[in-house]
Amino acid sequence: MKLALFLVPPMVVLVFLLIRAEFALRKKQIYLLKPLCTVLVILMAALSLLEPTHNPTYTWGVLLGLLFSFGGDVLLMFQDDPRYFRLGLVSFLIAQVVYALVFGLLGRFSSRDLLTTALLAAAGLGLFLLMAPNLGQMRIPVLVYIVVISLMVSRAVSTAASPLFTAAQAWLVAAGALLFYVSDGILALNRFWKAWPYHRISLAFYYAGQALIALAASYFVVA
Image (cartoon, rainbow, N blue to C red):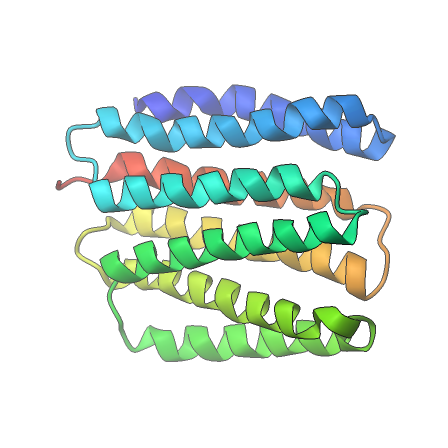
């Protein structure tokens, strides 16, 4: 059994407690639990370094992306301040760029990229059009973010065509990236389209996505 899997049960418990604290607006618990959840995901990825067949490019790339995600998580705990929101957005944007580069370097282009790109373009355009009337000065930053996260998801899907990834591992990466996309979509729509009282459920998608990407680091069969 992979060592990283032992962190899944405590991760599930902590994310549940975090979501409960978010709904109850218990800020002290949020300030403790949110960084702690991300630290657990970082440990999941780091434990792959103990696997004899780990891929250094994937592991270190994902760790770098997770560090920027950690920064984004901390900054967005104070997102009521526009400055922290923008900085958090930049931090997550960098994380998405890092992920896209890692998946792109290890993945392979294939005919399915055309379908993936078309679907992501349609979804991204739909999201942008819904939010556009309320974006104001955030119009360009949000558009850039949508393009980058869409690129990240498309490169995650490209791992399915790479001989470096097993089929199950490629599914972990693709599903993780898609869950990350869904999480950010929920948050964006809540902020810039219509407020949704249950938007905090996005945390379940976010941490599940990050965890799948991190766990995939332990499942390479060749170094």
